[in-house]
Length: 141
Image 1 (tube, rainbow, N blue to C red):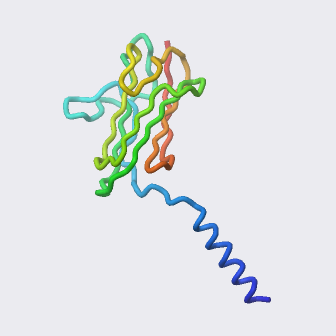
Image 2: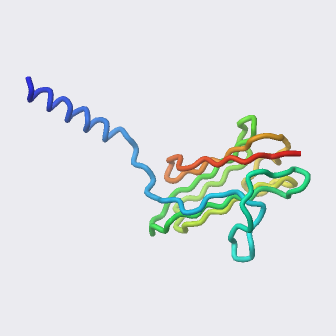
């Protein structure tokens, strides 16, 4: 009976381990939203509140500790009504810094909607199809 219980628990453990997806093996160093980047491509300031009338858009910046591996990167932006407003997809990405941007004036290549709603927006960061981070920022008048 004792051996049967041990075998049962080992089998359950093996099933659980095989069903859990492998998490992306990166460690985030910097993640922020900003109103712009300097000439070298680094954030000028951190900001989590933006004005449709005062700012041109929102810059998203994420950097992780280099791991010398290629990753599939996805960044999805959602407005306060949970509509997808921007989607960036990078396949076999070998760098360790990603920058993405939404404009309050004109659509860019990966942008579906020019934001017009006030409220809380969300940015979802995926590495190898695993959600790794969620960032939030507010848009005001």
